[in-house]
Length: 159
Image (tube, rainbow, N blue to C red; front, side, top):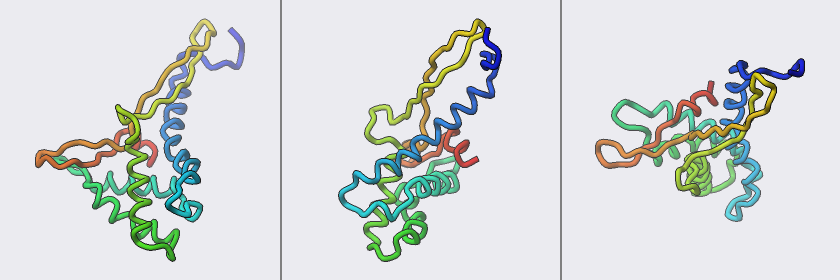
């Protein structure tokens, strides 16, 4: 085996790679905002709004149900508005909904994210692995309403 190559027993490396992967959807928000044709998105720091959204969902969750999406958007409005104070409130609200929908990963059937990473086995071979995770999850509450929950991975991002 080569010296300096992490061994398969280095679980710390795998944990760090997974933690880094959980931030990718936040970075992706800022990368994709330029494609939005309904807003001057350069005024908004979407990753920061995403972190705020995760925080607001986490704070609003309880044992019976999660956070109602409209309430989370309402809680985000002062933060979003501070980034673009001259923009209309309707735009701030739409930005908040866009960020939340992207953290739920609305476009995918399973609504999850997946990242490939690798580890080195004891024999020195590189092995590709796949890490599937979610940041915000929609769940039906006991009252039939749909609520948002933050995942353990989202909590690690806040960490």
